Amino acid sequence: VGGVDYISKPFQVQEVLARVENQLTIQRLQKQLWAKNLALETANQELERSNRELEQFAHVLCHDLNQPLQSIILHTDMLDINYQDRLDMKGEGYIRKIRDSSLRMKTFMQDLLVYAKVGADSQEITSTDCNIVLEQVLDNLKAAISEKNALITHDFLPTVNVSQTQLIQLFQNLISNAIKFQAPGKSPQVKVSVKPVDNSAEVGRVSSINATGFHKNGRNSVEHGGNYWLFGVHDNGIGMEPDQRSHIFEIFQRLHSNKDYPGTGIGLATCKKIVENHGGQIGVESEPGVGSTFYGTAPG
Image (cartoon, rainbow, N blue to C red; front, side, top):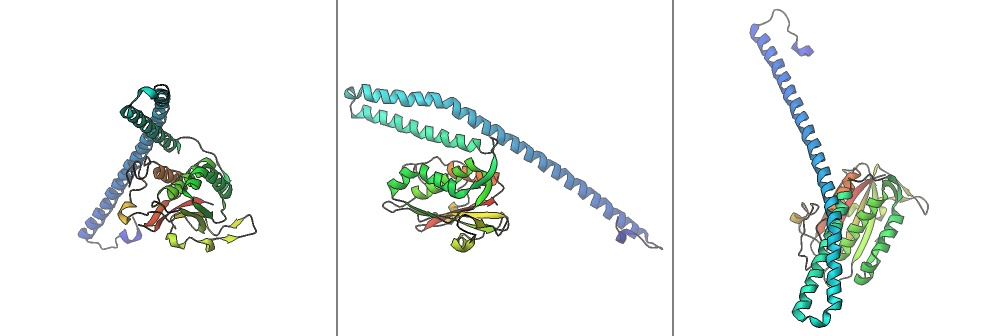
């Protein structure tokens, strides 16, 4: 009861009844709000539990299926080598399809296992030099970079407090996608940029991410002007339509056929999970035929 609810004398019965009814309504609404908050908290806990169980299931499933799948691949190769002179073109085609399907399944399980491990395993948060991480990623992607004649450039990157293993996975997924999703005959050009922002929600427009978005302090350090770093991975690839951006980070979502651009539809979902696991946000801006910029925030 507040000061406005005290009734001066003499008082009217109707006024008293109105004030009482007002307080009863407030109490009823407060109880309803408390009940809804409790239900929401319970639902969130149940969702977290279900997600943990799903991640554990995917982890166990991938491990259990890996051995028989490896056996299929091995015996297919042995059949091809030892009985090649007895197979006609149709038989060779069958073997090729078995091998290709098995390798796709292996890639799918590997990607699903990586997705399941994000958040399921206890990852050590350490002070991580992003320049060293990027150097390792580019070494991992050396074959793809050479094959596509890709040009990879980057700003001088900061040191951030993250899981180094997950940051490697994040950069590797985004850069490999930038290399892969290109028009035939076009050489990929990819740039990794960074700038400080005040909070994780301040992602702004990607066009504002450029080399002047941060301040170098000597050769080997970067001054931090905010609480988060906003990273961008820019490419000159095929891009995407505006209505495709809203669901591109959902697991198993693919915009293209496996024939045109092979993949599992898990990579970007893993990126989203990694960024959000560190309290950040991820997004994309894109124009068909021009390219895309994937951006995400990381704590300083």
